[in-house]
Length: 305
Ligand SMILES: [Zn+2]
Image 1 (cartoon, rainbow, N blue to C red):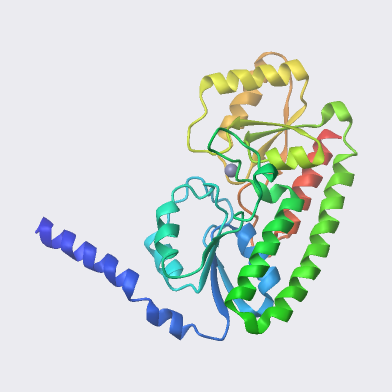
Image 2 (cartoon, rainbow, N blue to C red):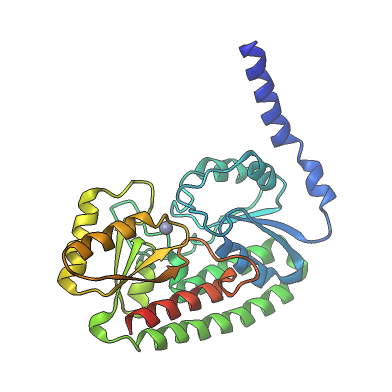
């Protein structure tokens, strides 16, 4: 019985993987059917692809990409896509095998693949910080890769992709200037951003904030009591007034730090909620990349000014 069951499971998996060629044909509305991992990447592809792309983002609001495992439904969605865009640099650490498999029969592109070594933050000999979207200048580099890949796969619409790209880059440059001007309003000795995990390294480097995360650049390893103690000490010693929670990371770690500091007679408040590795709900300001960066910046400046 167990044997038959497992055969059944394998067959079902095969059907899912092979049976989807038809779906792609059924969906054929003349648009490129693109699947993106994070909402930020989906938003980027939508802005450049415009009406010639149909974009599905696998990871919705509140979803942590470091921990995300593809469901059977995701595999089906990926299998029926014309193109796949993902972040790379192990942001989607549990999906590496799937990207490799999908890459054998369709364009499967890391939006960070054209970044130069010197543009990246190294966190160890082999590991780079994947949270590149928070330096808007780097996101413009990602936009260029997306534009080139769309043109390569749908050359008939090259002119429109180029036009959309130019327009969107103008908006991104404006955003970049906005963030810098706002951060400059925080007194220099208060330019410290403390969050649940190290998602804001590029943001801090680009716009001039010291950044501290309770967890490292990924959320795979649980924070320990030593991390909480070290962070508490840091807050007390540096008289940090506000720290931030993240929409895609549980709050309890940050709350433990705040309690710890309180016991030492140092009051720290929650400065607000930041959108780090996932955007907000669709239809809200934070549900777009530009809105998310603005929201984070406004929240940080409001709490630290
Ligand atoms: Zn992260």
